[in-house]
Image (cartoon, rainbow, N blue to C red; front, side, top):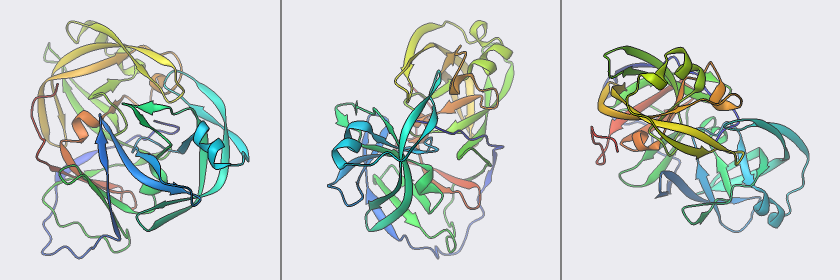
Length: 305
């Protein structure tokens, strides 16, 4: 899910231990992991409970157009939504209030898009950056909870890896090292996107500049759906290894794109790192300090399917 993307200069190092955790969460929200996506219960403008997808790749917040109509949201403007393979103008409604576990997120602008269902679950809304910019957020896949902290007082005390990044258009990228079947080594700037169902999707300029269609081994055709509903052709392949956050995965699956427009054609974004990898770590996102903390969890495996 995207309207904006982030480019990261990712630097990984061991986190310095802290004697005690001085931060206490302001709220803890349970979530469901359905397929590869995180779903929370929330309200918009005092509505009945809605299904909210939390998506770190969502630079803008989105509401399903049928849900917006049901809630009587008034269209107040329009903006350009950058989809996987193209862009288009979409209506927006401003000054919305999102409520979650006693926390309020005011003044949110919602893009109206047909989100539909995911694995049989209605997607009423998708939010990412509008939450991440306001709180430090820890996603704990072991306990299926999200904890929200005051960024001013937050202090990390775990033993995870520190992942430094920089923001570009509300999104975060990290460096990922790839070793091709030939032994050739590449470094890719990839977006941390827990709304993506694929382990790693590589953009067309990166694919073309490194001739990856010829270098990733046997390639099979596939497709993905973008936020704009467009089907985008992809090609499945594997690299010898991929290293992210100091962790190496062997025989690593990748998807290659040859998109000529939209997000997947951007040259300043090499790829998208999705939830099949991210869910192996409990991750704390601290956007104020431009860093994340990655801790291996109970579902970690060096083999990615």
